[in-house]
Length: 187
Image 1 (cartoon, one colour):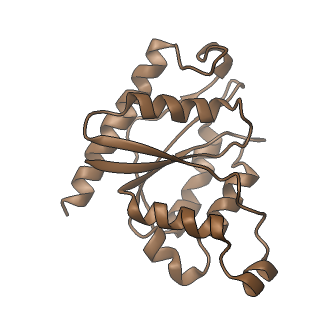
Image 2 (cartoon, rainbow, N blue to C red):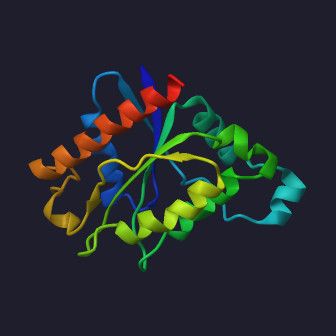
């Protein structure tokens, strides 16, 4: 059984991206388990804090979970046509110290998906992640995409993904990502 770690890049309780991650957990194919992680406890990156305290506990714990996972699912909002600051901040912390990058991210299969209330989906945010993920040495899954626009129309008031075509898109991405991980692990 492959295990991936899913992280939503939004902090808001009612986030469409947190809801999308919950839908991914529900829709994961047999043989794929999705564990959910949070970036809520990660402070703003400050080199002085790192120099004085080292890697803070929430970051250390999340790094260990990423290392243990077979893959990483980043569920990204799109803020002002780009990557959310809190999400990028978390990845920046996770890449410290630089000598840890190969251990945490090196070759790690990564998939992206996202939801937004706007009309453009999360295409720009997902594209903005690519240079960072390449720099970290990940193996980005380039299969079917999930870039949900007008998210309020596909989630109900309780945050459940109710739109069947969108559920099928999520399932297709997860099926492909599971196969990608299996091929990666067979190398």
